[in-house]
Image 1 (cartoon, rainbow, N blue to C red):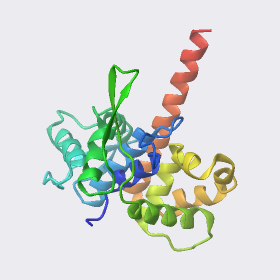
Image 2 (image 1 turned 90 degrees about the vertical axis):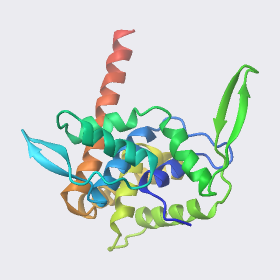
Image 3 (image 1 turned 180 degrees about the vertical axis):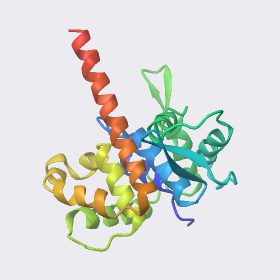
Length: 227
């Protein structure tokens, strides 16, 4: 099987195996957004430039990767009239229409997931994606679990980014349990700080964290205004 992209791995973690739906209470779209941008950075399609104290994305190479979501984002970056910072682009990726379905459909094509259509209240149709081949997610789970719950001193770059994005978006809490993850906070902070390669990868994690903070602040403000 062709190696999975970071955003495909994030979605696999965020999906319940049997139900084929995403865990509630997570902000997986932001983790997916960070993962897509990290992929483009890894593949030398974009780079970061410091502008007015922010990390702006600039195009390096517009050649497609052959993955629909990443290629759409790359095309948007290439066609943008002006540059934008990492957090802005993260929000744009997280807000892409049918983001979950488009990534899940690629995993269906790879034989990892299957797609089913269920009726909701006998009126609305809902697409869900139960697991078909558990091997890819099992490999991801073992890799992530080892990274988080051991004291391994040598982590590969992609795993460190995957772990950090899953953590800041709440996906790790859903997969391994909030209490168990909380007990490894020092380890998770160290992974985010020390292992992602180069400034660019850390910027993807920082942008996801910043976007999450903005969402939480907006939610709190809305709740206050309505009470």
